Amino acid sequence: MKKELHIFFTCLMFYTRIPCPKNITHDPDYLNKATRYFPFIGWIVGSMSFLAFYLFSLFLSIETAVIFSIVISVLTTGAFHEDGFADVCDGFGGGWTKEKILMIMKDSAIGVYGAIGLVLLFLLKFRLLSESILLFQVYDDMAVFKIFLLFISAHSLSRLAAISIIFTHQYSREDASSKSKPIAKQYTWKEVFGSFFFGLIPLFTLSYFDHKVILAVIPVFINRYFLARYFQKWIDGYTGDCLGATQQVCEVIYYLSILFLWKFI
Image 1 (tube, rainbow, N blue to C red):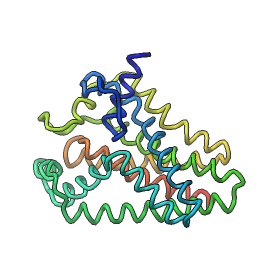
Image 2 (image 1 turned 30 degrees about the horizontal axis):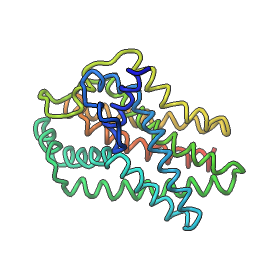
Image 3 (image 1 turned 60 degrees about the vertical axis):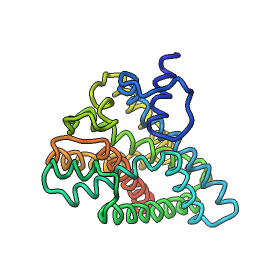
């Protein structure tokens, strides 16, 4: 149990800005094992994001509360995944060879592709999440609990889609310049099982109230498949930035899928 707690806190420290015990480090062995808890981090980030939404919605409009929920999620993770998304936009938008793409993604400066990508990403998150919440409030008696599950499932499922790329593809960089490399080197059935367990439980819980929402997993993983295939084509694998971009895009796809399912099916 003590070891599992250490692994969990390693994951929490790596993927969020939440304070952890002082004895937690970026030990490569624990980082490998921490993969199993990555979707569970989505439970934590989603819960904090929902809490911000709920509190602000008591005094402000739904749209304003959604903006604050997005702000809290960004602050909780330190824009970890958004940074990866921006780097992928810059790298694949401005590079035409593997070496050039990887070099651009490694640059800490943001370019025009990354800036435009982030603006569009946040606009989509804001609009889709706002519409989904409004639909839940109009048609459901247990709206607050379902909105809570919406937040949790979006963050956990999108993280599962991202981390699953580790199980099927190789890390692209040949050097040790990225923190993501230790995570990418090894995994066991425990990491696979843990990732899928924590990634799918919130969605299954939400589907208890409406069975059709389970179908949202299909477009999310179709999107994950094509993203992984695209990364493989251009850089022969993935990087940590690619995982961050996958998480962000799959989160948007999930909101879009839920909205479509709720409106038309």
